[in-house]
Length: 392
Image (tube, rainbow, N blue to C red; front, side, top):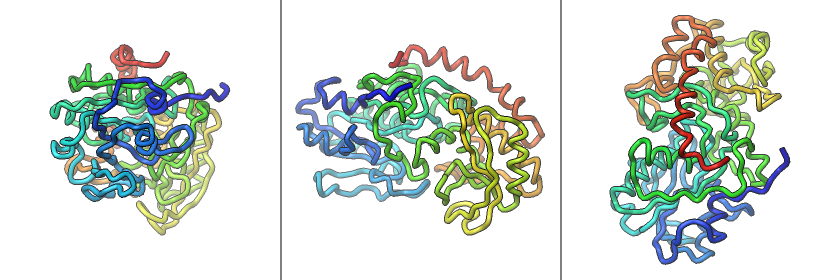
């Protein structure tokens, strides 16, 4: 597909589309990837266009994007240049308090999501929708493309009892929606019922990857620096629930994986023998500079996606975890709590959306069996999501 200039919801609003916000006091949930097509920060662009911006709000990693995972931002600070307060929504609170909403009439949401249930930005969105509903504040999503397309869904749907800040509503692991579509779904089907408006992207098609939109790619969080890392993330994020390094602390997070107890050549040979769709594995060794196994030599592999249309990240990651458990049963382990504000749930369970993956791998089930057990989840979600889709 040729590159086609796509306009974000922000761009559409600046061009005159969407609700009439003249005179309204605006709050803005934003981060460094909240930019125009020519890389002007959304807060600056809105202010320059005459919109009355009176408050800003930062998600996980901070409004300035400087925080690593699970690093808490200060409660609030002043943006001296724009002279507005900036409130953290990943600290003492994750839902805006009534005091944070006192001086706004409309909340704008302009975060770049990556199409994966466990990425917290959409849950910042739904919690803010709930708070705005209760405070009588309207909510407007300035939509952005799903960078890994909107045509592929994969993995299990979150089950009741496993809700957390990496999954508040029952959607699949790779959900194939934009933030605006998730807002519409959660507002109606899951009963948030806020005053919601979505400003859609212009000229985005579901089959488009981000590098086909002619929009600049700005890393949405510190460990998703490229579209390649976003592509593998829907599956490789599951390694966060194990004692395998998922490549944090390296220059290729989520593309590199390994552990001190694994042999790189054995790992790559075992995985390449399976001929997983769209990917090959290069044996490698690396030393993470932070996070798991920091400063230790890890044996593992790098994922090289050779056909992104065929590549299935969830299938790949389940296979990697199963392989590690089989090759090193005395060394492989599930990560213990706490994780993402959850003190009593196993991290792998809240990432997968149930305890089923952990139990299945521990009893020796094959990756094919595990994935067959969740195969109906996507079909059921397709039917649920269809009325809320905004793009072809």
